[in-house]
Length: 605
Figure 1 (tube, rainbow, N blue to C red):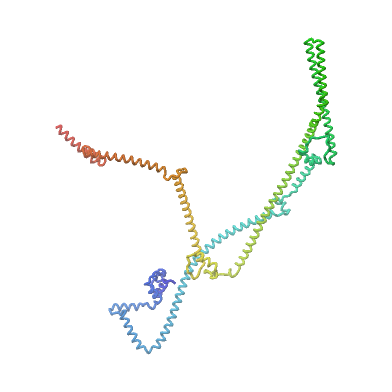
Figure 2: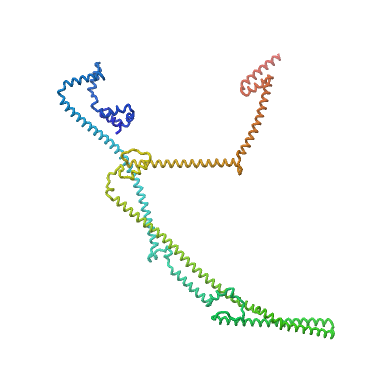
């Protein structure tokens, strides 16, 4: 209980009027002064209703004062009391034993009374604190009920949201399980979602039919051993075919080789014979043409000129000698030069035959390669479809593994949360926790974690408290939250100010760089524009100085003229009056006009 409350309680004891309306906290400032504190403490501890005068005593004292009799005070009263005590001791010596007993009883009764008064004061303070607590608890109960309703509404909303989410999750899990369900009834009723759920019988049957068709096509268009022939048909095997050289192949292909060799030899002989006949026919044709030409020429000469027999004979003999020479040359060519040339160019005679054979082989090979390309393209398409299907299956398998891994992790997390939930439910079902009808407001001394949290939240502002309450913990947390929010606001403000200052600083630096470098790379210690402006100002100042000197000289000259001529002075005064006092000027003009009229009238008279 505070000192102000004790002071109010003592006033109530002695029956001070309107003491019920007084508040003890209003008198706490009296106990702060050093001069008043001991007297007030003595007053609160010792003064009671016995020290208060009754109305009769007050009336007797007032009548005593009105009667005018002397009233003993201080020292005189102390002396009279001493004499009274000595007389009382003399007269009451025989009553000492009884007085001692009475005094002991009186002390005991006073002690009992003091104890009862203390108990009463204690009970009154307890009752006042209880009433104050009851008032606070009622306000807190209202706040708690309001918060409880709000939290209950929020929890209901959260509960409905969680139930909806759980229902959506259940629906999604059911759909997912229906996707992975491989039963025949499910596959018939629901359309397939995954590639593994599709039936590949039709695809495999089509692929099998295509392979069968390809095999039939290859058997139809290719002969047996085409692969060996194509593989052996490289550039090295394309050589000139010699009939006289013996076969260098193995024993297995000798018969085919011999047949082909015989056929080629026959073709070569037939070609040589045909070429020989062609040459003879061409030679006969050329001889006939030359004869016909000679005959025509001779007939023309005979018809044009008459030639004698002697000339004819001479020509015949000459021509016969030329014919003999030509026959000798022909025989020499047949016997000597022609065999050597034929032997040297024997292989050239076989070239057209070999070339025709090679052209036939190349045409056949082109035909087979075109058919092979068709078959190869079909096989490539078939292989690509197989590889694409295999790749799709592998991708789907990988996705299934990922989903399986995620579902396993989810099941583990759900199982852990389920166990934690069961543990919490068991802990809440404990009667020591659930049957706590009167929760404690103070923090238990054994609750070290809460005390540490309280100390952390208090920080440096530690208060010496006998008991730590949850309300104080909540107040400290609210204060910390307010401090954090205020610090965040200050940080945002300082960050904004810092950003603004940096932007201004950057702008100032850019302006300074522009002024120092003038848009180039050369540093200028002074601004060129300012230099120009200073030069202009300097020139203007010089001009102004000259103008001022001219004006001052003009003013001095005018002052000299004014000092010398009174007419200019009067003109100046009139100008001054014209600009400053027009009414005075008007009166002067009127006076002058009046004087002028008088002078004119006087002159006329």
